[in-house]
Length: 412
Image 1: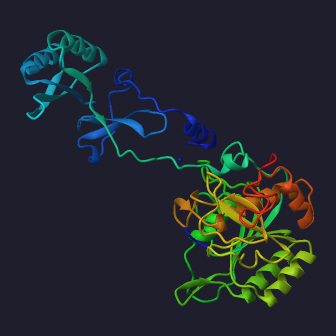
Image 2 (image 1 turned 120 degrees about the vertical axis):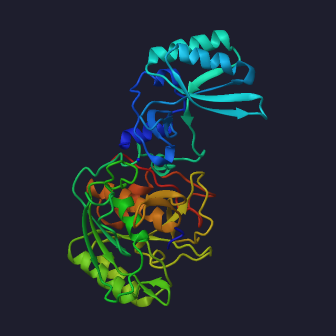
Image 3 (image 1 turned 90 degrees about the vertical axis):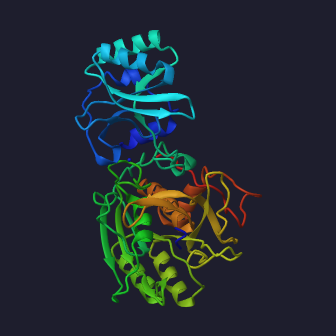
């Protein structure tokens, strides 16, 4: 099923801010001692945050002084050097820019007042020359992840909702890295039914687990059912270079979860219809388990199993524009849509963007956990609660692409 930093409030606020450049002169009011590292030449220093980009950084000398740069016409270069020296500064290197008809001069100053004097003199003696901090620039790439899923379902922000009461969620999936920073503080019981040495990577299972119960100290990877206890069982191994789980392993996992009293089970797995698996699913449902599964990513008009089983809530994936995931299966069994395209999620190590019905499913499961923790019991009750407030998508009240539509959070 793979198609695969600031605290919570700070991250969400930063994402909402409009970037504003911080004036170089104002930044000079901070300490003139930077921290050095080789990548910045002599060194570099953080000055301030410019809204949504990286901290404003300034090149420093090996001694830790901020560097300043003057660029102006060659004919004004001597006047610039005299103004810097008169203010107590020092030019430490010069570069001619003949194609521009300019000269660059790098200088240091002992204090803010020395800089101010030099700036005033340069403006008077060399008006076509400009003095500024020797700022550092970076690639114009996003440094904070794009987090649309919470907003799309109506949450106040990533990790903005914790369950109002203790609740257990089961998860039948692949290996989970419980040492991941987003999972270390989560309440997780993890086991594997795989006896071979051919254990698959933990990207998928770790992503699903974190989307459910992640407790990310930085907030970004916090789960949608924060505070729940997760019973995660790995049933996947590598067979013939494929990641596969047997009916026997899935049924055993269902049995263990139901035996422990777990009444909500996430299955971000997909495969063919199977009569024996159907028996296990029916038995779990008859014992009160609410089952939620992914519709599959085969781009066909047939929902995969176990999602297609009548006892199971089938979930499809949509993107930030509410469009169905291009690979998602369709069919009459689809019940709910949830964000599942370019969702930022944990991986075995680190994090990244993931896509697939696998990752929409734990969001629906998490919302089911919220309503069950407030008293809903059984699949029909959960379905009714999820249906209350759903945002219709596509044509008709319910359709084969989106089911009833986009699930919406109704409080925590």
